[in-house]
Length: 301
Image (cartoon, rainbow, N blue to C red):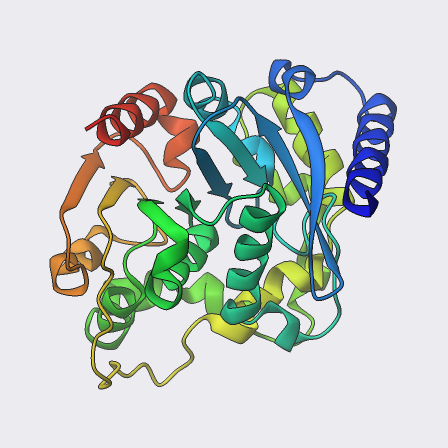
């Protein structure tokens, strides 16, 4: 009863916020809103459809709206849940760098899965959402039916490139800046939405970022991104034991394609790798039809 009451309050609140912040996007008129709770942290999500559960996890700087093109298609035969990660949009913004440890972010996804009355889900992650998804699949494989990763190499492969590849070291200069004290003071909602092309969509993103917490966004980097001097991980590999689909826009200037090499060394089951030459880091935005078609076909195998 209490969970249903909280869900109802969340729905009313999300609807009120949308009503106050301008023109709604088509996807916003279709979805329902709810909240899961992980150790006192409330996590907002938008849901659509019925069927096997798919959980979508965004990266930086983003929110659940990044999945606006993929959600309606998957919702034809799935229950699709798009999460606002902690620190973003309508989710809580706990203080402290430790609150953004990957282990806590993984627990958030487990809480979302359980809030929908499920034991496991297909998990789709982009950027930091991809890092969370990789880690979830490694540490809680029983929670993941299949894994879809967009523009986030396996973390060990990325660390290898940081240790060996000067081009990746240069491409990651932004992450080193984000790790510095006070870096959040250089961020604005409008600046974070620089990559969103459609003016109506950009307006919704600006509103979402104004509701977000800039220090929290950068805590993902401060807590989890490797620091100099970059060294490869010598520990034994914990392989992912579920099927994996990776989609990577090759024009990504932050996460370079050489980090895709050798991914099969970290995956025990079948691995499908799709590269999209003309797409950049936000591949789900740059090539939504390619992403939709590949995800749909792969899930239907």
